[in-house]
Length: 566
Image (cartoon, rainbow, N blue to C red; front, side):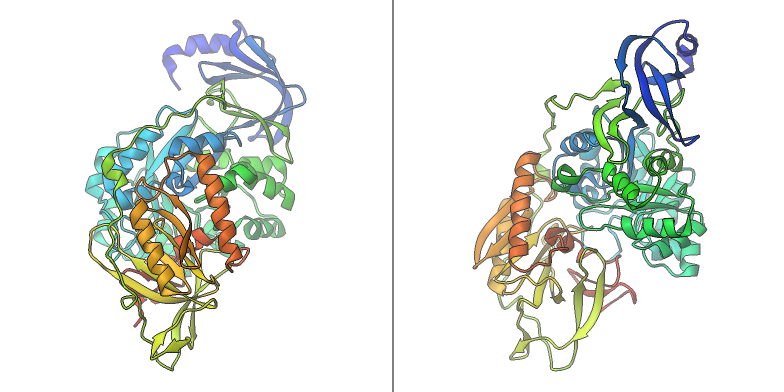
């Protein structure tokens, strides 16, 4: 609140002077009283100055339409949407999301401070509120081979930026609960700010120690039982509904069965591709799905607005009341969350306006450096006893650690449509490091797919049923400097280049959407289960902080036991 012009604003609030804009006769959703009241909303200088009966210099009649606060995405990675940040913001805005709390740890893992500066620059001066959480775990764990190290000392120069809210998702929970020095430095640096969590499947005392560090949120709950444990420890649960991880239904059903207060729940997308946003919506989809499951509409809207604003200390966002920023979503239907129009700081967002994407440095478009591998390099020795397997779980990013007898010849693993082979190759520092493992449940037949989007270190990952296709997929991503590719009949079937840090396309969202949809279709034709997003599943198979088993450049890693296998 700027008190320098309080007298002027008060005059508008009292109705002594006409406000710049008045939205007339709207069905206003009040997130404080949980009422819907027919009211006028007066706006001056981008701020709400009154809700009641007002006259304005400009008046817009919203009779029969619902007026909600702008929706807030509590946690997302813009770079995981595959398109330039302004394009994603533009797309999500059309579905009513006016505030984005982003964690740019993907770009920072690849390019360090240069990647962070890119994200700050790309998200300035947009028709939305974009706040940043500084990445806490770059790399995700100490043994990971990523592009850069982002230390507490490097974070300090960013703290004065008003768009920096706090510390990004703390996924290295071991460093937290053991109070390791480098992590304590980061926690201390943000002792008076919000700290995001990433804490799947912690045991009782581990979760207590994690919450003791004043880590406030977690978006990794996949079921209600664990969400409830986090709430009991004073945490805010960010219910995730993205492209690869869809946890909303399980958690919301638990809320309804327990008649649980929803104040400790918010919504996020985490990782949601542009094609899924275009098809089903953004935070609006979380709201709509929750309503369909039985959450009262106003409570669902609160989970997308004021609950999140309070959690992140965004004191001027999340509500329609005097003193709040004039961010609105106009809905034709409350239950369907059908968006009629969107306002940011009192101005109607013009979705016909051309999107401006600032260029990035040439250095950020040359980040893929992998060795020339041969079929002999990809050989995986096995014996007649059981071997460790990574099992993909349909519709989830978690995996299962299984034991099984692998198909083999001359004591070497021979992949097939049931037992695929995955290879992870370091791509940042020319180390030449790589590792191979067997995978069950991906079911790719007659080819391979590969990606440079591989959380969080973003090394190259390829999976397939024959070595020739795997090698061709690796070569193709080296050629285009990152992206997605799919090989069939030992030929390149399709490639989506992501040349900006191997994460982001500069070709425009329509091109990305069309190419990605085709490639997903090809992957399912080749055997990938219908409920498994092929590229999302592959992008998480190397992340050693999500249970139960992963493959990194240093070998197979048991997340539960926190040790390498074999």
